[in-house]
Image (cartoon, rainbow, N blue to C red; front, side, top):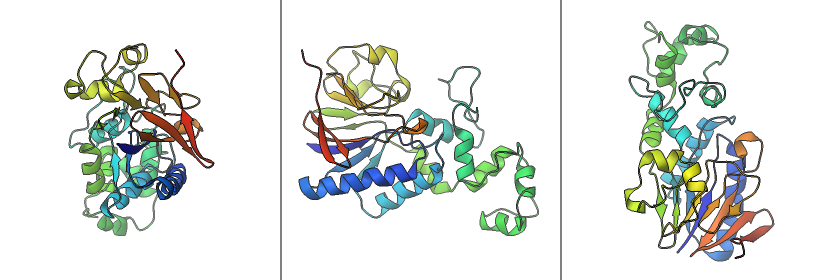
Length: 269
């Protein structure tokens, strides 16, 4: 029961490629296994579009990769709907394009100008507007009139479907990989999306046996930490930290580094 788990990427394509190089080396030594990316593929980093392209291209080429849904992926997907929606789990003062959440950095990776608040500004800032609109499949005589219309235009349909259809959990006999965590006391099969991509305190403070070792991200820590019933592998790539990955064999965990494997042990009792 082997697999790999990759932490919160947040638009950092070069960090993702480096981690995949280390995983490829480990697979040459230990055999192939599924690579699971545990969500928050987008926002805050410089190349969210590149991250999605990279994952899609690998999956389409037959790589044994899985990408799970994180809260940032859901926020972007909701914004891309015909009528944009705000994630219900956000505090009242926030929406996806709030400066603290990183949505604007994602739009930059698709070529949207963050200095403009409207589609017309974005269009005026570029040469050969008519050709650009045709390339995106739009009528150059009827350019988009709002930022939302522009974003829907420039984000490829394949990306929209990819974000919308991301699964929430990857399980083996011994571990469950999710974005944020699980609701203590609720069987894995009955967990709900809001908890799997948003939960924090009830999960973090629980010492319960969840039936499987939970591997998660969502809440940055300085280093990969094994708590006994869960392993947090979000080491803050979004904020200048490294992107971390682990190899999983049964319930044993090794961090994958440029030096090779380093075992991550639970706290001593």
